[in-house]
Amino acid sequence: MNLYVQQSITIHFLKVNSVTNSSVLQIGSAGIIKPATNLYNTGGFTGAAPQAQTPIPITAGYQQTAPLVPLTPTS
Image 1 (tube, rainbow, N blue to C red):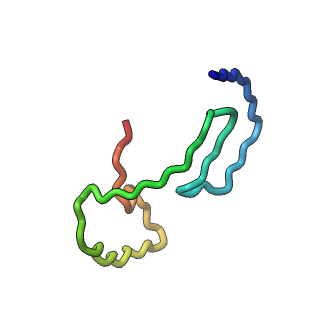
Image 2: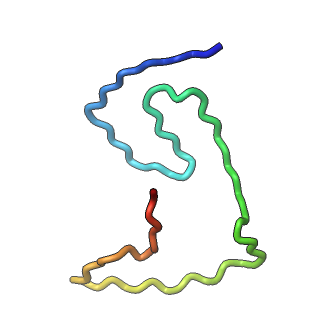
Image 3: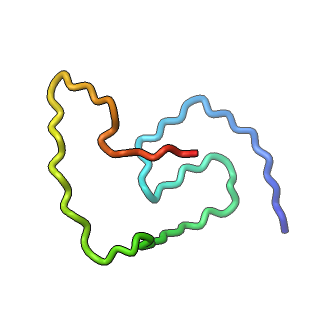
């Protein structure tokens, strides 16, 4: 049996305090949302990750021009 839902939703104010890795924010009907957790080792790593470096201290008056974590553009 196929069920088709047509909705008209008006949102005047929506406040989301936090969204984490396993959170789902649903507005309206989206059918079935099945939780899935997958862990893949696509890099073929066999050892532990290297130790994190000490972060650079941010001093007063410092203007950050780029993110501290390199971001990849999305298409």
